Amino acid sequence: MTADELRGDGPTKSSRRTFLSAATVTAAATVAAPVAVAGSAAAAPAHSGGSGPGRPVRPQSPDRELRELLREIDQRRIEAIVRRLAAFGTRHTLSTQDDPERGIGAARDWIHQQMQGYAARSGGRMTVELQSYIQEPASRIPVPTRITNVVATLRGESSPDRIYVVTGHYDSRCTDVMDATSDAPGADDDASGVAVLMELARVMATRRSEATIVFAAVAGEEQGLYGSGYMARQYKAAGADVQGMFSDDIVGSSTADDGTRDRRTVRLFAEGVPTAETPAEGNTRRSVGGENDSPSRQLARFVGDVADNDSTGMEVRVIYRRDRYLRGSDHISFLEQGYPAGRFTEPNEDFAHQHQDVRVVDGKQYGDLPEFCDFEYITRVAKVNGAALWSLAQAPGTPKGAIIVTTNLTNDTELRWTRGTEPDLAGYEIVWRETTAPEWTHVIGVGDVTTATIDLSKDNVFFGVRAVDTTGHRSPVAFPRPGS
View 1 (cartoon, rainbow, N blue to C red):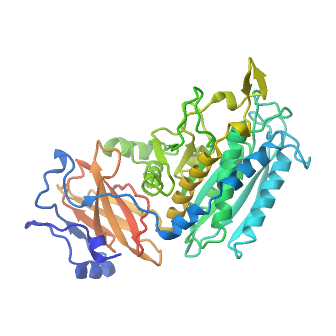
View 2: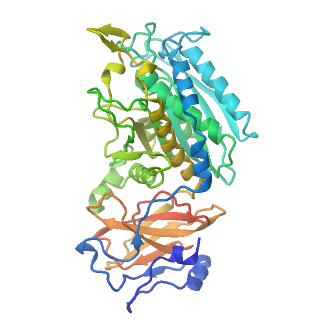
View 3: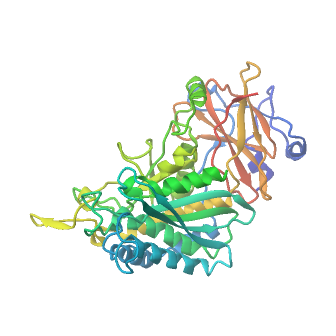
């Protein structure tokens, strides 16, 4: 990355604040001196429609390594995974765990075996475990039941403690959520999501990642998010730095219940007000705004930035909700622990092929069968996930400790943050947008510093901070809180 790219656009008229020269930026890195940023000559006040300092925000184009990774995602393998999982008959959480051909135990063992095969090609970087516990009787769990997640962990090399997680749930159900014996092939819900994470685990196992990526086939989702809940609590108890999580749930079909098709869109649900927000955090949010700036919303913006392009062939449609109306998936388990998370799902669901007994009524086939999946579509969803996860893992982490300084009342804005520890960290950028804008619109390079002053009022716009490495990879944005 060049000094000009980090510095941003310079002013064309005299001002009480000026950009630092490249030499000053370099010197500031050692003393963490404030960077002062002015508006350009053509800049009008920020409230006049968004003009002001910086340059327009542009998407992050995939580099050659990411393009090669995405090309290796194999539609035939994805289809084979979906069909094999459906062939276990039922994968209900309460179904048999010791039959080698049918039930959730057979599915668990097959997924574990496949993941171990991927790990064997990783040079020791990927490990696979069966993460199990006994769930005592609870909602939809009438007797003590073993819940097992199959977890493959690709350990990062330079930032191994920073973690990104992708899940799909391998349990299934039919019409009666307590029916553990009838056929419940669960092709779309959710063999499709499991196929996404398994294929990504295969492709990424042979590559070197900076941060850690976790691929988890979880159980117990249909009964109440039990497997993912246990996994998220384990991370929280260990103090794990999970900076992003995606649930792929019902990503198998591009056809709606009316027969229309949308093969180029995937929905990404991302909450606004954080599920784990404390009363004090809520008071601050109500005072300064930020209902559209939760960590999960910043994660969703990042996905659109790196995965909505010709390399995936997909449009990422961000939905400003935690999940579908009054419904939920495994990302909620991570939201409850305070981790940024979102849920991928197909654009329009067909409920005749979800949570239904396999049957024919008046000539219409019901049931979640592989014949109703679009395997080309699942492959593109896998590419969206792959672009997001790999870009996250190769970029610096989301800046920590970001604040807007509120010690004095001024018409400019001072921001501070904590410098990251990545060995290839090049510096930081300030992003801003009008309060009515859904996406970041302007970016200002400020260099390898930990504080910057921007010639815009915090009363009128929203600000964020993101990190940049030496090859141009950018982190998700950190939304600053008020501080001193």
